[in-house]
Length: 568
Image (tube, helix red, strand yellow):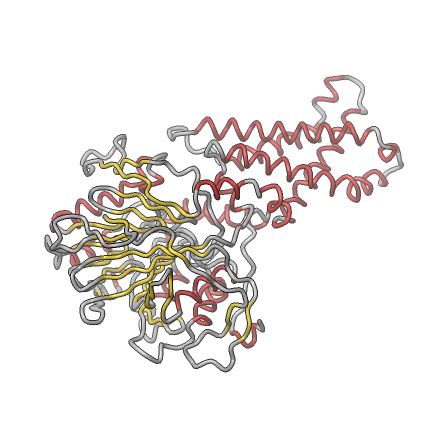
């Protein structure tokens, strides 16, 4: 795959435990949180066009696709893009046509937003999958919602790519939106609303005015698909205020019209999960290309909004049951055990950093051991410094939430236990080192031997100890993200293909890809709208669960069809 011929450089998956990346992302996240309000471009978007859009479909029906969390490594991102670009997918005896609309649900680039990142990780792969508008049929349109990673530059690169005023397109998909949020009228009394929450903080006034204007066309027979940047209904289980902005939007903008929100859909968590209730479906589908995230720790039931929210006028709380997840809980637990193999193999920089820290700690302990009294040994300045570094690093790695949040103490306890375990490993390494002849050699020979022999061995052992910590802590909902981010699992991807029928029935087909392709061959003889690269390894999408059917307005009872169909 020659970048000169492709026009972009295919990227490796982001190494989330790389030390420089951890530092860079952490600083950018901190700056975005501290100064995000000053960089918030949503207020400035009030000067841009405030039009809503319409997608009538063909003969009253419409196919649309949803994908999120996509701009990561090329193999996973392009595997999903390739399937989305195909004219149709045959899945278990059904042919599902390509969507007339492609909805990107957030985090279109990793690890941070910038022009080169979007070009190489998002625009390039999707242009390669569908280089030109389809020769047969209308040109598909694309709408994108920013996630937290799109926000790290204040939406500058996002708006430049997805909200261009003239000739906006990504390959064969045409972009239409002018802001970071949008409202689209769909056929058969369906609407699509995509709201932009800046890191879940609030919804700005210009955005509320925009949606108030769009909602003025709603009536009691209308039904709404609501796209959000994050599945706050899941996150509210630990952080009750997480759902407040979405609830405020529903009860103040949408509920007064009499229209019903029948589907909430989001990415951000890199898996598929569906919660079902009497009034709506809550779907997380963040499998567009980023590393897989665990599903076995998902709660079996959610109460939305949470009963302990501090919002005085919150909507009535309803219960939602977990109906499906991908991968399964059993597969998710099995994949957790891969941490011992994948973390050292895919995070060489992190292992090197651990090896360096342990080597310095061992040298400090060995130096302290050569001093006279017990107190001089314990309070040697280099030793104390290294112990503080290890403990501080492990506690920060555990990411303790604020004191008023759930599971606050749990993170501190696991962080400290991990730190003491690493210190115990350092002490054991020092004990072994002092029984080897190298420490008695003249300086700097001990330092060289420590770097050549001790460093690589202790780096491997410290990484295995970290893997054990992640496995144990993850079972208590601590560092679950790092447990899977460190492994960088590219397989088990997912996206949604949805169909609105003329009678208003919405059918959702959740599609999973158990194994992405890792080998590609050029397709120079294909027509202009055919993919530039074809998979050598077959891509086999399958239904994650039976299609979810949401009845049209005329139905008085849940829809049922012959065969396996989940009704809502």
